[in-house]
Amino acid sequence: MEYIGKYKEMAEQFRKDGCDEVMIAEFISREMEEDAFYDSGLEDAIDSEKLWAEFPNDIKDLFLNSALCDKCGVSSFAPGYKIVGSKYSVVIEGKCIKCSEDMVRVCD
Image (cartoon, rainbow, N blue to C red; front, side, top):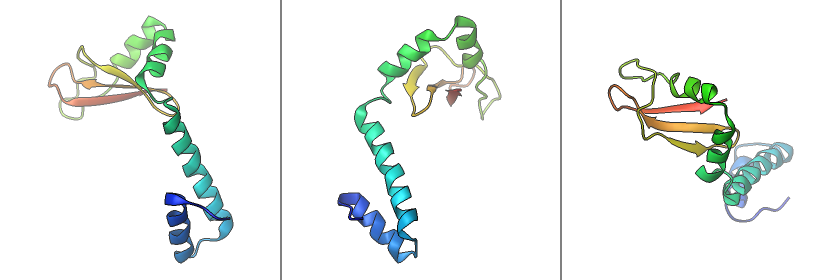
């Protein structure tokens, strides 16, 4: 199969590395799907905030109070956290309520 742009460069490198065409096609197909997802804008906070709004309050509280801070061990976000998207779920990004260290929690 012929590819263009970055996919062509990727395929050429895989061929140099000894990968067969089936493996190359599979990997590049996955890369194209991921690129299409990000190009679609579905990872925007607007979509994830809509999903976040659908969670019951007790589940939101669970997520907001169960993200362990690597620096001090506290598990709660400070006010001002933001909800962002990922390919499969909602992600909370914010600061530790005690030490202001960056924290992230995937809501799965």
